[in-house]
Image 1 (cartoon, rainbow, N blue to C red):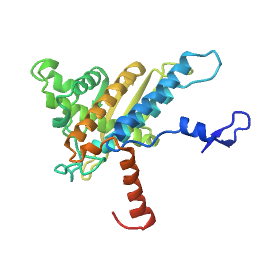
Image 2: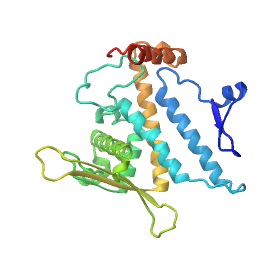
Image 3: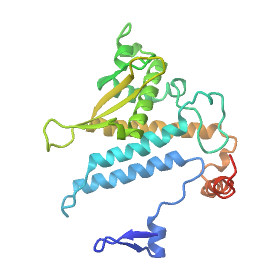
Length: 267
């Protein structure tokens, strides 16, 4: 284990005491998402604190760290809980992955309503087949109160899908930063997603623009929703008594290393 020496810019070994105090502890089995999000949020809080304290003259890039944090809050958890076409009936067998991120699965969560409200107020548009925007759902019949919980859940699931895609494919111009004038602080971020379906002439597109304060608030709601999904998954697991065991997590990783990396066996 090494750290970066400020004078030489070279890695130097950490002492045993500092190694124990400073490195990430192993993740607990069954609570990976909760712990990963917690650590991501803690890192962002440190950056924000440094930005508030400019006494040492260090440059701190808060929006950059915010986007970095979204990978830990909106991408990694999505891969754990997104519904796949072939796993709708699968039950969770271990600490990783199950299809809980569905309109039905999140419709009653307070965080779903909070994310819905942000989407509804934000400038956004979707041409994906079968997707209604929050504005379209809210405008049907009567205002927002009459939009069904499942319809709201559907909009939120679609949004989380598109945000995941925008972040994961960001090299294709899918995460874009905006300010009115060159040299001004970043005012908003655009998340863009598209796909070309076979037999269709036009690409389907999705885009939403979020200002920085709203994006900070949204990040917290997304984090809270995924933490609740993991806790819900824990309740469904037969081996819930062993949730939170870091030793069991280590054994799980070791078994995968031995089966695939070392023995070259197919899983």
